[in-house]
Length: 272
Image 1 (cartoon, rainbow, N blue to C red):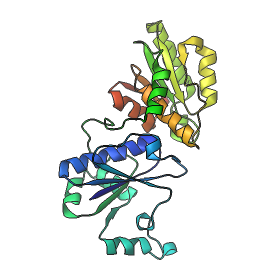
Image 2 (image 1 turned 60 degrees about the vertical axis):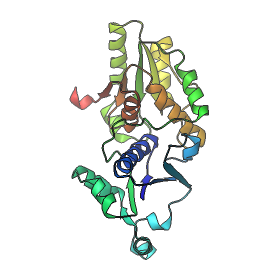
Image 3 (image 1 turned 135 degrees about the horizontal axis):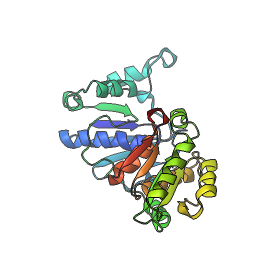
């Protein structure tokens, strides 16, 4: 049995689950996903995606003791429980280290019968990234509504703000304005779907470029189930554009492009 505990935001979790599915398919092991609702993603898997064939999804509102980091504060009980249950546990830091060392994860799953991985990134090669993730009907209809005005000249703009320091510093708003202006100069029919977690960014884009800007009618947020569903609709809407100008360091920009295999131009002022 392989168990994956994906962490962080939607796109991070999709990448981690994708990796585990690929390992399970290549080794013939059963796969279980422990989906934990937390302050970074306070939403059930079932409120976002349809079930994935041959993958067991277990919803949790807290991290079970056996999957916590063992320390003196919890009397190292997680390690004791894992030992008694025969669980081979790989923390997020360990998984990422093994990935960087190009370790053979199949060797781990073939050596132990009960393996648990914690991750928020893709740690194993995947042939068709994100192909198995299908939004629930409510979100699919929202994507259809957002994208009904898209044309062959609709470009995606993803501006990550709020708590993403790297994106804010490396991808200032001026770079996105410059990119839009260049696109319009090259093709006057261009329109732009703007996905952002900042209302100020959305307003600035609309004020500057008017009818060329397409927005999701719902205001951005990150705390409620509806906010997370809105974010997933943004992700799949971005994937239906012709290409995406993305925020440096944001997995959201990358995942949107992976879904439909469209070009990603990561805006980074340090490389200008």
